[in-house]
Image (cartoon, rainbow, N blue to C red; front, side, top):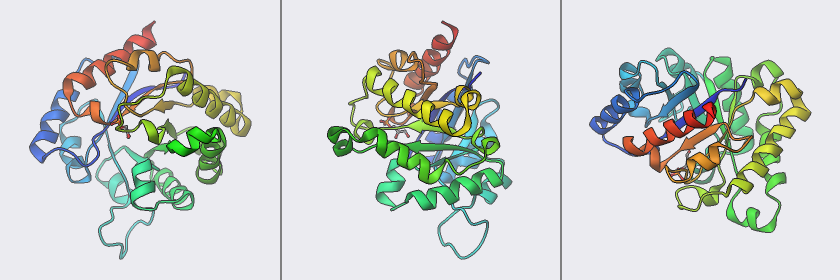
Length: 253
Ligand code: 13P
């Protein structure tokens, strides 16, 4: 059975005090055992949140593939592991776009995360022009082929995938349930081609992009959507708790 996950990507938001307060609130939410909740605070607050969290898992939004060395400004997977951090986002579209991260670098990051026992949340998704010209399935498949599908079956089983159409991120325009399900079903079929049915059935594929308390239930109820990677709505405890509850509700029904 695949894990159902609701994860909050706080991006570059919140003061230290706000981050700690929000972390406490998330940690105090009523989280059923059927669901896993992750938060991805800004790097500076990751250890603060880790110290507060008892059952919410804490991840970093980014890390560098080399363990140590002259890479000013970077933090390594090895350092995250040493600090007790459990997960890392890899391949978020904002990293791809603003920091020129390409599929080859993301492949190295994925390998480094797995080598250090950190759970990678690998993000994929197409920009608007690719959605409009109709080549979105090929585009996302290429991202997975070039960064992820070199992994052994054992390593791949540790990866969470997140489909985040760029045109839906922070725009308020979410993918329809049909659009999300079409992509998620395609992703699961490519996993099956590569790794077989059992691994495909057990892989978690999250949806991200303007997920909010109003649309989460319909999205999470899609057969191949296993939860969400939430941006804006994860910054407000009241909204995020609805998403956590929607995730749990969907699993139980
Ligand atoms: P929004 O939920 O703000 O659209 O952001 C989604 C996202 O980028 C999560 O990683």
